[in-house]
Image 1 (spheres, rainbow, N blue to C red):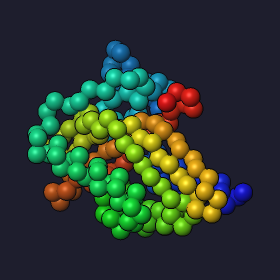
Image 2: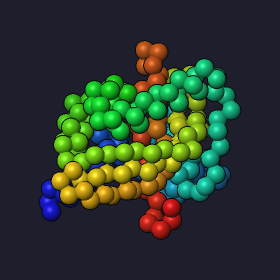
Image 3: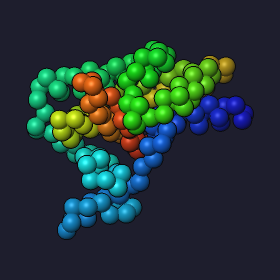
Image 4: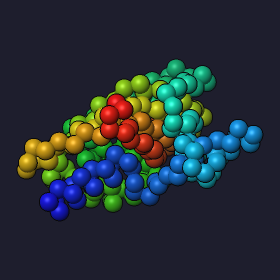
Length: 188
């Protein structure tokens, strides 16, 4: 039982993108536009790194200033990020991550340990670039992840909303951090 709990915990670490990128839940103050404690928007504490939408609610607005070529590259980088882990390609997965946002050695260890005991399949929908700058972008998606314990066949399938923050590094879009909020069971 401890092994199953540890595997589930490790899997959630991957989904939630822990590895040093912890989030605080906040919402923007209507007067100042700044994040107010306890309200639903994610805030890193640095204006340029704020997630570009509230994690609460159903409305997601696409950024209008994204050059078509960059949009294509960002969406391709996101697809690669999702598919490499779905295919248990640890090297490919690590190559999608920014070494500025992740400790790649820790991520390798956590990923390999998780994949020893669990298979994982991530399904995404509603991919929308919600914030864009020349060297950074934020992509919203809805995410369903199925974790299957290899030994028992038991499945766990959390669903939720995720913002994937990308940085452009050496001309390539890399995952800098992710911000995930799970849906309440029965609200899917």
